[in-house]
Amino acid sequence: MSTAEEPVMRCGGDVAELASVRAFVRRSAAALGAGETLAGEIVQAVDEWVTNVALHGYRGGGGPVEVELSRDEAGIVVRIRDHAPVFDPADAPPFDPSVPLERRRPGGMGIHLILEITDRFTHRTIPGGGNEVTMHLATDSTGGDT
Amino acid sequence: MNTTVDLSTPGVAVVALEGELDASNFRALIELGQRLYADGARRLVLDLGALTYMASSGIVALHSLALVFGGHEPPDPEAGWQAIHEVGTDVAQGGQVDHLRLVSPVGAVARTLERTGLTGLLPVFDSREAALAG
Image (cartoon, rainbow over all chains, first blue to last red; front, side):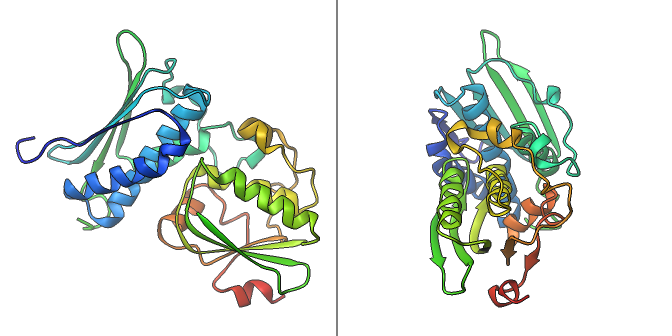
């Protein structure tokens, strides 16, 4: 990016930090040109993934999480890195809203929401340990919101 | 998230949620519902009009509250998601429930309810008055 410093937030992988993560994402997405609705969608996608990392990756014990927003020609790109055990969301069982709630796997709803919200959601294992997920959201995907 | 409880209708607890419901506070909402049920409320009306954000953990809270007000053994909030998911229930199997009613979800909260299939499961009303009638 030549116009602005790419926004990055580092936190400790604790659910108590989620409100400040959301505030950071909302602010950063707006600064990168996302309209209010799209910014809200990005906020939810990030919140769901960071929650998964905190509850299932770090199992409540905390650990480093880095959230970075940037722009490409299509829209907003979010990258979230952690040092938790490798977990590829593509390995999660597919979500079916007709499945009774009590038979849904923990974390499954969050990943379902991320897939609904994002145009592309990919995972890679960080060499040396940890995960990086990348979310792509087109700025025109919410009906001229931006 | 702020919660405001109105017990002026006998047997009914109206709880207004304001702010953001996420993984940091969904257990507190379940515990509030458990206390209200223990104190005699048999129907819970959740006013979502001032709720600006609901994470999927909020959906877990709604499911737990549907269980609690359905007279089921409340899940152990300390045990977290796993226990909540393991609780057997007829909530999802038996179509819509009547003891948990939602009022005026808007914006991102309404989208989350839709995307997780909750709107077909829990009755949604436009106003508290409508939710309290019938």
